[in-house]
Image (tube, rainbow, N blue to C red; front, side, top):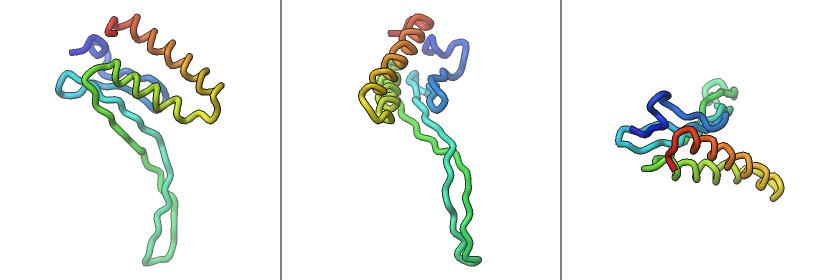
Length: 105
């Protein structure tokens, strides 16, 4: 088992991302967020909104690979280059903190 998961079963990276172990010595990067979709009732002719949790999972053999994907996904949501640079600095400091804590990289 990876040292990162000896005390905790998950490693929370941000509000929407976490890393958890898989069943075969790898890790899974999980993205989840609350979303709303509009449902249409054909019988009554109504439509209503329904909340649901959108979830996407990425499997990797090493934590470092999952963290690289996390950085890529977090930076993609920024609209300008200054925001991307600021976000990447914050993410790399988070990775450094994880590195010092678990000595994995």
